[in-house]
Image (cartoon, rainbow, N blue to C red):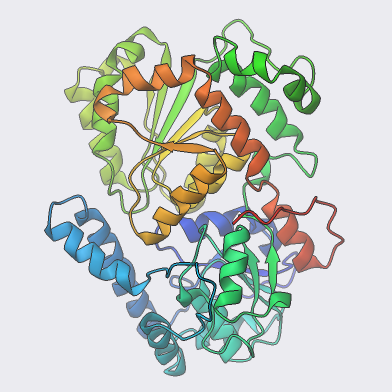
Length: 446
């Protein structure tokens, strides 16, 4: 791995297991001079480390894909999920005792896992900013000479996120929400080592501290989400104060209502898309709705979507009202996903790290959670009012438009915009670079 010493201001490190850790790192790539390093897949990684990471990733993805299977899938996933189980928050108590997963990670670190990476980046000891805990633990254990920052990527975290000896650790945390900030304290992390920043969202969708780009897209989105004006009429003064007096402007040739369905990195919920397609056939044929089926980097998922479109007799709509983006690399996917979100009115996805994207004013239809951390993400998403669990996908054409016509989906978009953190990327950059924080402080929403 070549060490760059030019425009790099920090080492931005992720792991390419699923999309969550990489999505957060991609939003912060400017700190790394445009580069993100994957701790489990970088140039020069020792074979032993690479093999350990490979086995871990493949096991997770395989079990995630098996989860929809009755009985066996639930049993296998449940066993894996218990290793990263998040204990109840109340009553508040000392939760600093390490769990089995944490002890196993430190056993591997003591045997040398991650040492090579830390030695290489130590040649240029700018701050280390990682979106996964193991690189942070390795940097702490092997005495990385620069500052060590770790970004949480869910609305609550297990004990595995805090170090073995949290009171002595140098790791500084960027908490994705107030619950995580308070949770880390229960795990023994010192208060001064925790910054409540919010999840890092793409700067391209925000447009700076004043969120100019975000507000412009919010004006357009509300036009699509409140066709009867029920929500906008009720909150007219509030909307005008925040978005301007002409906050809803329609134009000839304007794009139709756009729904984006996104599966996770393991592709476990691809079958829901078939029900969505079948239910919305009429609207798609009439051009009243545009459906984006996001396959990410998984070619098998893209083929599955395409086959479903053809099987349902929607060949003519493919490339018109039905779009299936597919990408050859994670960087291309994250860039492409960001571009599609510029035109997205509703995001339908499991409650992964994408739950935080409601902070962009995007209402979220919540697919069933996979794993305990996603259950907590769903609770948080509903708590801030930015999302609602899906109804039966077979009848999407009925309940979805009922929700839209009532102004309820517009209300979710507004709640996410107002209540969920938006400027996490800017807050993190300011702290890492030692700049004054001009972004308003976040409320402690737990």
